[in-house]
Image (cartoon, rainbow, N blue to C red):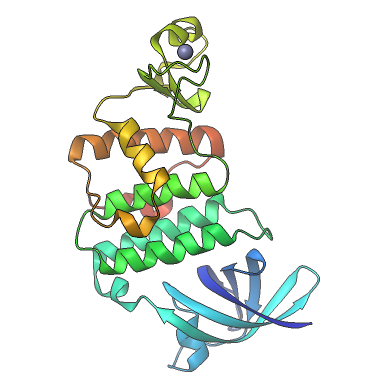
Length: 249
Ligand SMILES: [Zn+2]
């Protein structure tokens, strides 16, 4: 059947013979893989819509779980991202991250809006791109029901939150950590220094659009990034992403 959907291309894989496979985060069908014969050369309406960092509308032929993109058009292009190398790298990193955490063929409209908001915020932002990327990652985890618990100790409910223990999924008080010790790998235990509880709570409670003024200092930024990397590796088996090594903080 013929159908259409808004979407953002996360990845494209070229096949011999000019055909390619697009991994599209679509609003209607979630993350899908779709074949297409649309050429990437030239400046046709469809070609422009397949570029990275473009919110597009796709005309699709759908046959059970297989998809073919017949044509596409730009809904909104975040073209300024492509004009700045740091923005480009951070946008690439977030597309790769989003591709990794999204399941196939499952609608995720909240995540979709979040990604559009991220591209919009990144395009307009002037520096501190790492803060925005971290905020996106925490909010993406939340929209998938995987956000860490930071309101209380995950074991006893105490308001004392001295540690962030990745394997426990959030903050833990000193008492409970003592009980756990021996059963938890040291590398999964982080202090809650540098105001990270407040920062995580603030990020989770506010829409991305409201975080445009959020700029973390270097220490907090680094500490949170370590926690995020550990959390992603432990809970989602996401190790270092290809585009990660190019990021400048
Ligand atoms: Zn406790």
